[in-house]
Length: 285
Image 1 (cartoon, helix red, strand yellow):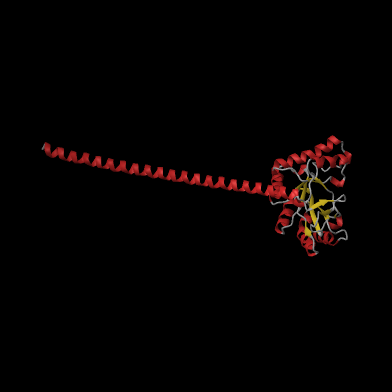
Image 2 (cartoon, rainbow, N blue to C red):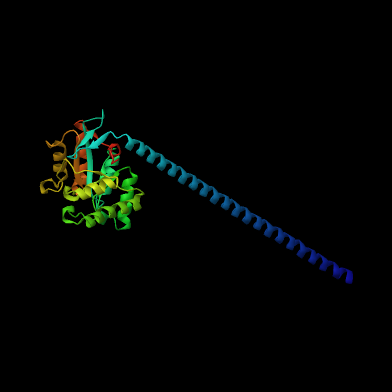
């Protein structure tokens, strides 16, 4: 009887042992699968990080190459700004040209204007006011405009008439904008335009000392009531008798101006005018 009683007990223990081994093998298998999954995930993350680092390095290299190209172009300018702010060719550069400029940016329509210009492959200068660069959204707008390849100019901080300011106040108006712009896009403005075209000897010299080309404009109309309409504005900007070789066109960050930009660009080109790339304009030595 004892023999027969012991034998089932042994069978039972054997079953437990087999079951335990099976569970242990399953646990080990699951553990290995987890480790393999974690390893694969880690490798994937490393691959993505490497790809991102490579992309950032390529973008940095591209930016440096573009900056080098700009510097080379600046060393051999094709145009210079005359005393009356028209764009004059150097040597044998194309004479039938016009320069597009936009003041009081980036208020509400500068990005829309920039996008229209980019689509038309039309270069321009955006002259910015510091009081439009105080929020993150405004700063991001300026960065987008710059990243699209447009030149940035200094139009003072508060758009005050420089003739009404002391030299110290004028300096604050100009230098503060340079600092703001440099913090946002990584470089200072390359051009300076005084509000109302009212430069002083001091402001002109300070701007040039800061490496900015000083300019006013040849003509503009979008602040006049009869031209606060896109069709009327496009017509006068293209058909005015003031349009001529080297014309420096003044426009503003306005709704009707933004709407008129495509027709202005097309109209100028239809008349045989080439649009000046600001990078080809002479800078102070």
